[in-house]
Image (cartoon, one colour):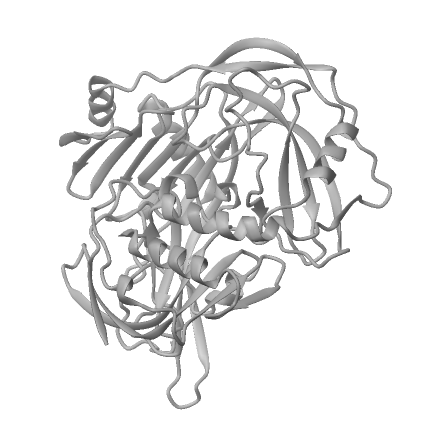
Length: 487
């Protein structure tokens, strides 16, 4: 048995921010040989591909999977339901089966206690991840059929079931995850794409001949400005600068500002997750909205073009198994509320991962976190755009990526509309450009989104658009506690 020691110190905002990664590592995977091991690729359409030693592409995928596991940097405390595989059945992920049981010792940052768990497999999420560009990707680890971990927010719950399939969620370096994605995408790109058809009775919408392209203003992110924001938030502490961001920490309070986009992530890490032992007293939705707007306005964080969108509530599920009957009971506990805002440009919605504003409301209506990525812009040039019919033809030529489909299968267009696309917060975006958004029904209870660039001619520095390369789609999952974070 190999022993791996992991000290997990940096904790991320629930489902959104993995701020201030610790420089932690996992050692020991390098010695694994792909013997008696396997890789199972679970595609979002429900199909499964099993790879074992000797099968084409196994070695490359095996090594890429281990690289992803080696790159674990921090623990992300977010819902891990006991029926995990059912919960993520419509996402694409890789399940890695180790050739032997591995022991990991985890030191929890908040209790400074160490817990040993055994695992013989891991799940590496490739799509459906929350804010993937900022936090990397989720990795679920555990020992199938037996673990001493339960609950959905990273707590060890006394007297609870040990029959939980996967025990914890970690954050892996985005570079390692992208490498694994590219392998899956490359394999997928060689497959025949399904036929894309319009829904029954549907007609494509009329579109303008031209739309304005907007120049994104590069944010002025300086030590002085970050410290001024920290002071406004009541956060006093030392500031740390890296090539990509500034971080201010004081106890459980943390502020992170990205240089590329000005993205602000603020949280009280002791409260952002709620408490499943002592559940928070959450306010009404109206009260949460009022508190969020007041906080943003008081702290100078409220954009003039922000519009209230919705309120969602993050929750935990505690699974317990009756030792006498083997029946599993699930207790749902509300933990924190998210008040979300949206924006439009010229009446068109802003889509993509890089345009978000949300406030986290905790116990007694207190604000326990803020996430804001809201790039400023100015007019650049009126540009000719495609018709919706031309965009539809380009979609059919490009095909659907991120969903493995049976040859000849049909995917139905449910809705088409124009929008402006915001790149991930870590990117230095040059322009806000229009895109056609196609919402597609896979026929399996899943709606996916595909983006088609709307400009008839590319700009000279065309970096503001979704990649035309095979990519994983934005998914709309129903129900989805925070569907706006899917990327």
